Length: 153
Image (cartoon, rainbow, N blue to C red; front, side):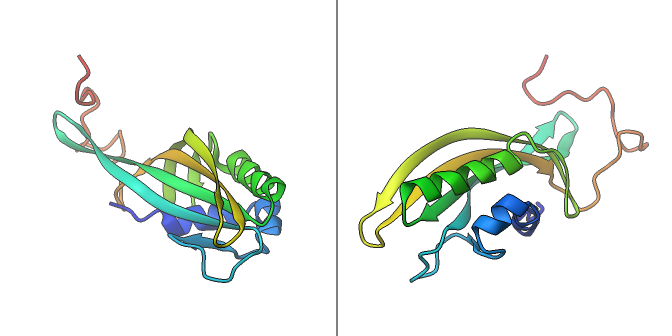
């Protein structure tokens, strides 16, 4: 399976609006560093799945990626969350060297952390991507064009 986390971070930071809101760098993996109070984003892989057809691995994978927008006030958290949504919702194509088939919003929720006194807008995105380093081309002799995804008639 490919690790798409660095590509996702780079893709988000390549957007001028997102990058401006996070100071060009404040997008973190798994947790917000202690003491950070500036608007920041945190991404965390919630689940990851392979994709198969009757002949084996399809070369695709999909995951649920949670992206949290943190800020000291609710409006700033919403602004960052919406900028992230605008950047990745429906995205497809190359993210660095990862072929992304599509990014889709799955769910979202709001939260407030009384200890840090920060607001969090949390959204889960489903990301379909090429799970292998060298995906098999549909025109390759190794590819079976008549293979159907599992569960399909």
